[in-house]
Length: 196
Image (cartoon, rainbow, N blue to C red; front, side, top):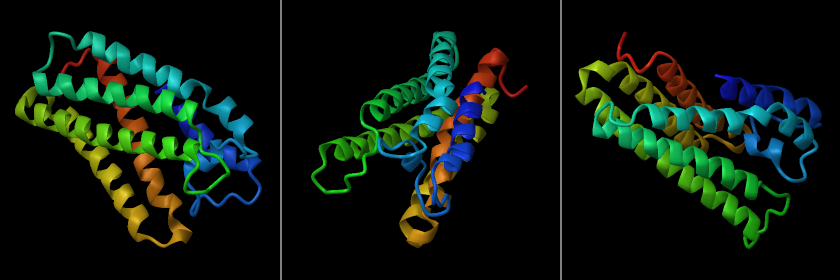
């Protein structure tokens, strides 16, 4: 939950340090770009996002060993890998101001994004399959379904809406992963006691 709160605070309050930032038009990653005036505030507010998110998902991975069914475990492990790639990849390759096609830094940023999206989708699908198969974890499968629907609708939305509204559906995608990580943390806190 701390990870989600830290990320939410960065998304909501960093635009205060970015004159002219339009949240409906611009991506969240613009707030943490190397040349963004909001970079320092973003780093201060999001300081607990990656740390707490990684600690939580790794504790979930440790807890579920020899528990749950294979589909749920594989899905959660893939979700953990996605979190690591996201944390390391976006830290190593933040978005830069240079928008040229051959900017290696931005190409790597996009590559990380593609990997994160593919791992997010595959992990959530595996969690859904494992959760719906095991009646004890239907609620976790429902949460994974909601996260996947938000992610997919965000991706489709960014492709179909006009440039003026790109930032709105993009936020569905970015918050779906952070939100599902918080859900896994809550399940861990409850000892993965199933639908209760």
